[in-house]
Length: 181
Image (cartoon, rainbow, N blue to C red):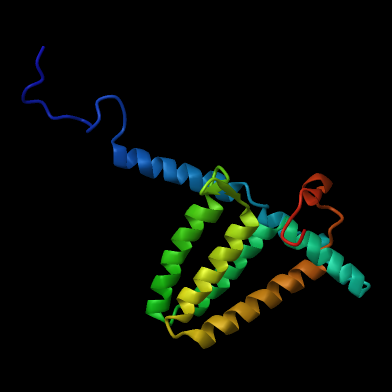
């Protein structure tokens, strides 16, 4: 039987078109990648906040919380920097390009990053991406906005890490290592 003169319903004979398949796969990776981060509810649980009693407790809480909520804190810092760049279009474009690179190399990566046969840890990827992002943004001449937003972001993260109690965090993930271990 011939199908001459019929209108094809898809570009690939056995499934969805390649473009739609790529978009669907990207959506699933974004959901899975960002869905595995610490829940925001857990991060902002009201009864989990209290003032620390000593400087030693502040340091202990910050070490634990920075490791446990590492991905959340990166998102907070990137969000604050993004908001500061709204009035600098060129810087905002550079930031969005860098954000896409962050998505592919840090947030949505399924397997470990291997370059020249060497395994690169998440911590190294985060530090390198931070430095490259900062340098690229500073080249756009929005230095004052960037530095002030980074200062605000660091203060916000450190305050949260200091006042967020660590009693209710799961011990096995805490011991797995974090940002400062």
